[in-house]
Length: 613
Image (cartoon, rainbow, N blue to C red; front, side):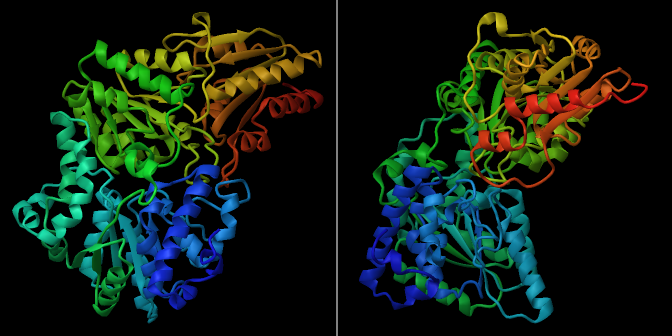
């Protein structure tokens, strides 16, 4: 840790630094971020880009007396350092350590644990309303990226803030590297903004990167590219914000601390909501992040060759080659969901809607109605934001939309907001939804091909971890379950990744003289009748899933076995917020590994059988 950074224990310490020392501190912070993220993982480019902006923010506003809100929270590392948490970065994203997002339990400087984008203006409106009603004089600062501004909630919050006239300073961090949907009102003043030499001078730093973007086709251009240009280059911001009742200031150089301080001081003097438009360079000061748009877009991870995501990435390109009606949709994450090869191969059939999951789902329903076969690739945690649309726009109309959910189950280091544990409990309640759970690399590819042939909505969900590779004989087809192992007395049903835990448990139980049957259900909904019939012949049935136990697919299996003379135990994730940690360690603590499942079976077997059962 640098000598200046080591002395920063609160934002007040920044006020004692000279301009030269602030520049030195900025360099120390960047070095510190690179070292810690390379060691522990996390979000690199987004934090390197906000160093000077965050320093200026904390020199002008008095946190935590003034409320500082971050959208999204993955750009808050510098904020954490300046509020006395630099030493905690050794435990970044580790179990029991510092969260990768703002955390209310960590510091009074953190107000919201926000890692699902586009919500901050809603929080700001609510807090401003509460403070005004109680006669409390506290300034609210909401930092939102241009990517997060593309979400519908952001526009709803902006509209209500303007209507209310309440005091909120909105820092619009325009880093030129995010995605956005098309909103035509933003592009009406193209000529005016391009004739502004100050603005265009600050835009030139992004031109080289923009020129290297792959060419895209008609559908894609109607999606993210056109609107990103609108937000970043092609509209006069004042003409957009001020009719909503929100004053506009800018644009300003987000890497000039003095200029930023002056802008924020001026914003404080105005009554009502004010947008301070700040230009920053994502990944600034670290060449690998500056020159690699994929690393820069999200975090240090990539699509690993042995991952479920890579299996999907290969499969959707193949599906697209076989069927020209296949269209791929994502919500600002084409890289980490594995869609970049499809985008490059079929640019006219790829759509990035920006951070707008609700729109993605309803738009997909419309595409399906028009004869296309849309495939939506999202993180499982983000589908929760669009459940209503999935249920009523896709499900009610029985449209053949394929939902491909990455990072399903316990994800680990990103904490409670990113565990994908709700999808099966939610989607299983949609009457005509098919849910497929691949247990191997090859099953992902088989299931995507099978899903295309299903005339109705389908969800395929897989975890973040590596995918086992199996032989052709170990790959199923359609909605048929696969009996992996035959035994007597005990039946273990492992959904998706949890098939591995079932197999490990069966090996452990065999040492105790218990020969267990193991099923790979493949389709969690509907369950194969052959699986249900076979399970009913056993004394003990244990279902294992990495989603919520309450109301999940194991509970549905138990319901189908309610008239059978067997004891059914449903193992899954409890209904609680689970902190970050190693994914396998969390599963083990929850009894969702081989040893835990075997222990459950032993416990049930040791209990007297209820009379009459």
